[in-house]
Image 1 (tube, helix red, strand yellow):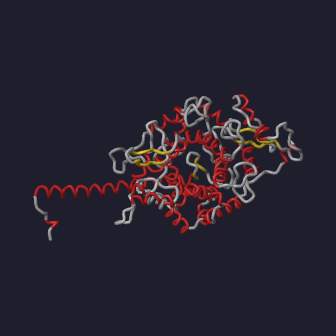
Image 2 (cartoon, one colour):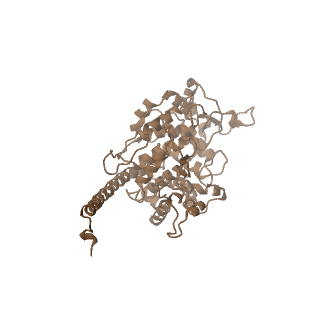
Image 3 (cartoon, helix red, strand yellow):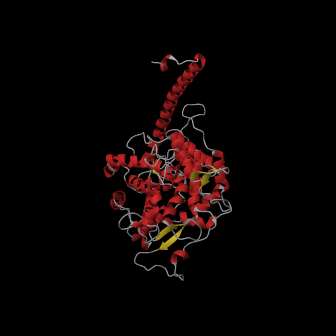
Length: 489
């Protein structure tokens, strides 16, 4: 085709690295002031993006020095709540209402009022600790037991998870946050990060949450058209679909070292009702965004809003086949493919990730690199999708915008890089689709989880011996009725 002479768009890695370094070391624009409570999330977007852009570990360490890593790790750990979990920002670890319970003798507040840990901040904290670590002990300083027990208390009777936990006077514990599939995904992620393969009765064992209940809640949230929502009666959303599929993947993924996302595909296949319908719904989120042949004007449209004109309702399975099999669409440089999160919506950079990540977990997104373990066909038009990201939302100063012409922001910039990495973009790190982290970082998490569990076993063994000694002392006091020798003199 005449349009095949069009210059190929490219990812400007040095420019993106400069953008992320500015974000790391400079004050963020004023528009981020409303995100004060999400500092850990913003930090994750920055540090994870630098990791994706620097698959070579030595290059990554040049951009974030060892001293910076140590300081950032200490900053992350300072958000840890005394009763488990992490707070979203250091300014929330001691809120004003804590003064109501201030103990003027010890000059310390009651522990329960020292801040509100939330489930999102907790996963971002754990991810950051892994990204910033230079060894295989990434979770040193994390209170594994309290965090896992706090997580268990966030689960509701229907199997879903809330965001925060708070004791209301006279009413008991209250689980805050709505019915949100994101919290379910995060709960499954935290469990995979910290739990480890410890059997009941063994040292280091912690009570697990109801994994079957969580899986039932997720599966019951599938809608008639194959998507996922907060309930089966609500509108499906690509972000919820990713969270649902990735959570099911992590629940069935081994808690031992060297696991791979593909190990959980059989479990997902057997669990999800009408999986082909789900795959069809996900693949239907892509549509022809534009046709621009070099040297020719774009085709005329009767609509003033071309992007709305090119958004489609859910097509039939047969009509989808030409989209991702026809050479005209997949190889021609005239087309760009957009992704939306719901029917009849405009394209959005983040939905390339939510859709592509879900298909990746299912083994249906094949990177262009030869190292991909997948033998299944890709259901994403990778080249036209790549062109949309690089030509329309990649910004001149680095980063990605939400839509064509929009300024870059941390959230869309991070997930723009993440989907390009999943599609095998040269120069980017290999990514784990279920965890949104480079696979090298995931390997460190697995090794560190083993160390964390082993440390818990050793601590429990020490406490067990001390407990036995204390019991012996108590029995000696009771039986003799007088002070033992170790209390005299």
